[in-house]
Image: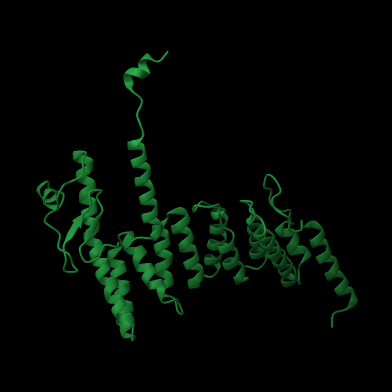
Length: 316
């Protein structure tokens, strides 16, 4: 049993920590300022021998900060959670649940898929993956963050590739991983992965799913070549090609591409290539959303009335 002196010293240390820490605040508070927290070095000195107690204290503070943020509509309402989580994981890098909780809670949607505080969430998740490199869930969360918020699909694909090979990973991770790898034109890696899972799978339905994904990857490989040919033609000619034969005649394609799914390959007037047997592409969902948004903006710019050059020169 601890002596009264040891207990008193412990309580004094915790009291000092609490006194030097700013308690969770009620947002909004005007211009954002980070919560006042003791320096890590000082906490390590004061909490020597009681690290778990000090860490749990700040974990409770972090939960309170998140709870108060949930009652607010301020864009910075979950930013306090980042600073608490960062401090907690410095004190105890093995505090696993903090990475997943904070990394997913910090991003804030302002409406219409306008997200803020994503950089802070990324920092926490990257920190967690560095400490737990074989944690499939943390890699999955980080991959989503990188792909959805930052458009860093190649980095996301690599995290998914690793996550798909880790033990006890979710069954949908290989599907997501091969989709991202194909989107980043890592077709050989995507095919090797899906064939490995297919060959090791005993469930007939799952084997069939992997067979279909392999066909999707081979199709995407063909469609990407058509996309590149269309882009090259448009850049050179200043217009969209009319037919696949025109792409062949101009040397942008060596021949009419064969559909690995048994149908035929075509493309829309806006340049989107497709298979008659499969209209969907192996792309992240947010990519098509961004593409549609860009096309809508371009159409609006083309439809907006342009100022008359003659009138502009004669305007007093």
